[in-house]
Length: 292
Ligand SMILES: [Zn+2]
Image 1: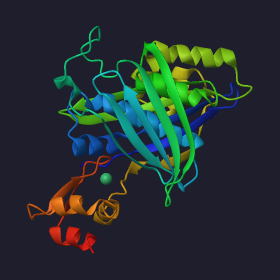
Image 2 (image 1 turned 180 degrees about the vertical axis):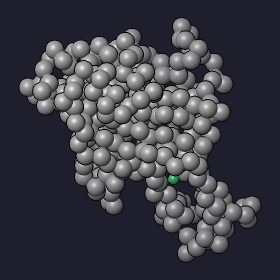
Image 3 (image 1 turned 90 degrees about the horizontal axis):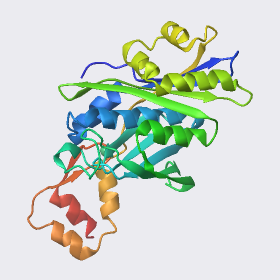
């Protein structure tokens, strides 16, 4: 797998009071698309969700937390479940990795995997004991396309007005240039400048720029913000917490009959992690161990 430059970078224009968050998660997208067998047709759609989730890190700095974003969609992707922990590790999956094999809902465009309307839940979980620190649910209007750009614009706008755009390509099913950008008007920021930038999101200018050249100089130019400077850069990488021990821990509480049922036929059980797609083989001797 080629090296990637996955990162989340903040930028700010003091003159206009507009903040930007930029995320590149090409490496994470490659790992997860391969891990879940996401089709080439769906890889860019799923990649856009991952890139948008990475933007959430701006208001999420506690290393002891995991952010869980899950959504039910009416489109053929069905929904998604993504986890992003405070150390910058990202994992997750779409509900349907090959949505193009399903019949399209009536009235939807051929390549639209998101559908209209959605229900999104954002949960902050404490690592370790798994206790829930906060949970927000949001339902978007039925008549609006539930694209990740729209969903995450709404989520981020709960704090300050925000507008999100993405770029995500694929080559032979391998994600390429998976990037997202959020523009945010901080309190006291210029409404005029923010609205102008929102226009560049709406007409596709910024998505095009993200895919071709997202460097600071190019961004200053296209945004018309010569004072734009970059702030902290944070690492983001694929990382999952699954292990054979964790699986056994979860099986520990199963009823005895169910564990006994797992022992016939007497061969290793394969458990597939729903977050990263990794398969774990659990030998019968370890399952027997749970019976005592
Ligand atoms: Zn896993």
